[in-house]
Length: 434
Image (cartoon, rainbow, N blue to C red):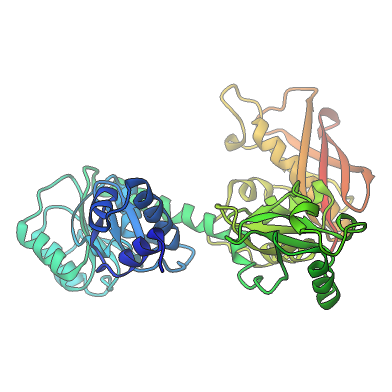
């Protein structure tokens, strides 16, 4: 027999795409409490079958698909541009392929208009209609009124028509900036990108006993085994030391170690690497946002993923640190040279602290990477300013490895302008050996 929670999820799954959903409405129809309805709708959102859209509400959608690095949904466009959704609500969760500004004649638009695109246009009803007929969403700028015929066609085709108070140039700039940021976000590798196939890892339940642990250990060769409850909530770990003197009949809930560091499915690979090196552990259990057990991740897998990030990094979006670091030129004697340009100073005419920090980090990482080909995570940077660093100063960075071990390193970096020592940096790093 289905629980109330399962019944609500089943009800939502069977709703037509585009239907609106409310806590009060579901509670009334299925005769459940509003609290139960709210929790079920929240889980449905996590499953990707509903979406809450500002000014529209919660609607039934197709299951969310993995997007390309530079794509947005129409609902995100509406949020970014502070738009009012006038029609075509069921299509809001579709992905935007490209956008075009409708400033030309209709006959000249054909080669730019593709299904799944977005037409940014003012009060040109003929262009609005043409876009919808070509399966292209419409975003009307300037706050102009949209005719009832256009809205009716939008609802018929399930293609969104939106309206924003911003002008066309501002609207296009906002969407372009959002696409750039989306590209950067999607280049940040998360655990969810590398752990999808980890459910085969062994685990035991809190109701299992020591003899069950020994049996699984002998079969799989795994000595550290995660423990979960009947709802798959992660509860702890059992290792040989935990059951060394335990009777075979002792419940694992009595012997397991509950003080375990975990990694979260939506956590970045770099963050997990920092956590594993800091705690000196080579394996972490992975859980979702509700503490449900997903699998385990090893330090070796994290190391390989960091290497893949560096090798496969695209040049579609240049981040601030890359823009700053590429100014450094390495000389034949191991020093790094750079000239302070107007973009690198702050209001009073001296070098920006952030720019100097980025240069120090880059010099430290490149120095160690040249030495041992390591995956490196910056832990701390201390800067001592000895003299003012002004515009057009030609700087020399001279790095020295002060201390280095298998897991960490400390470098000192002297910064010279001509022959004058103007700053000193101490950089501490965590290392992941390859």
